[in-house]
Length: 419
RNA sequence: GUGAGCGUAGCUCAACUGGUUAGAGCACUGGACUGUGGCUCCAGUGGUUGAGGGUUCAAGUCCCUUCGCUCACCCCA
Image (cartoon, chains in turn cyan, green):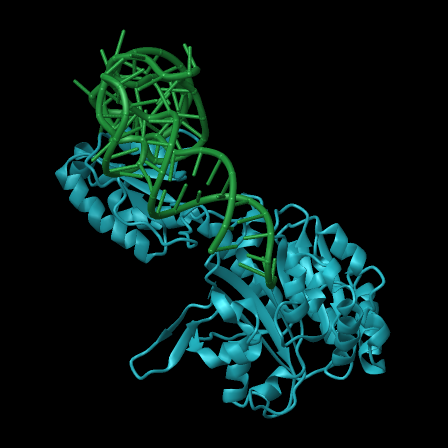
């Protein structure tokens, strides 16, 4: 068959059978996050482009080449959101949520958009569930938020996850480290591979991640952020790790962990799965203590993370969620019975009972087969004989037993049986 | 943006070095069983072999173009 229209590259439909799993992930997130005092915020799916360019960083790949940007009628440059934090911060500042001063905890869920070449675990429309906390610098919050995320994954039944954590320092100590690193790499630049020569200019921290043996060798003696970290950052990081220990959350310190977005300070972390391919990070986040000021708000420390739901879904068993199925199937024979059933179905549905029927005038045999496949507990059968008697057959499918009941009492009897 | 692999029925896959009318399982519809599901058996529906062009007596198979999918790179969640 020649398909006339298909979804554009890098986007996908999530079909029944799969959506139940997504609903489960979303519902579980709400339950878990609300235990921790988070409230949902719904943010627009697009923003003025500057909201993203300012926060994410002008020279990041996201901003340079991956955003869906367009111009509206009045000439504003708009962009489909490539991530959630920027919008949440914008909303936080716009609505003065810092007033009165207190800790504000928000979560969001929904699609994000990045125009990249699709790959396993990477789509152009992908889904995230994110959480952001504003108003505290306390490392307990770093640990607690990461803990919430871990508990969430546990609730989903995920195993073989690893928490990697690092500190990126603050705007006091990071520039010093960066300078020292560049100094160190300058002499070794010709040892680096082509890609890393480019990274040298753009994001030298990334060179640590290179797979090339030469680059690995070149960075062996390099300075680390640790030795340049200021007292404040050092003790914040140590405390965060200690609180994670208190929560019995295993973690791996990864001094090479660098987040791609410009706004991170201090704590940065990722949750990595051992069961995925090249795109194996299923959640990531960290602290961004300067971003609110960037957006014109008062100095407000903040911490947040986002979960990649597509990747999370691919890790989940197929049986961890509830599939909604009909409770009652109504099978009819003959026109009069069909008419009666049409009304009856509505009556039952008004009661909140999930009722299914056949729409194709199939044989009774076929209707029962459909009832069986639908997985109903009871099938109501109404034929010519029954309609003349004002009665119907109530068939218990698993038990293969049936009884005759008055049509007038169906609603009452069925409600009782399903209880 | 770069590279590799793959596109055959709704789904999973066959079809030898190019050779009759492209098959099977599952699913679907019907029958055996006139108004009673599951199990069994029988039959049937379903294909422009992703699309377009080329080579050849002959193309699902070879070549080119294009679209899509997949995986990886770059980058990153």
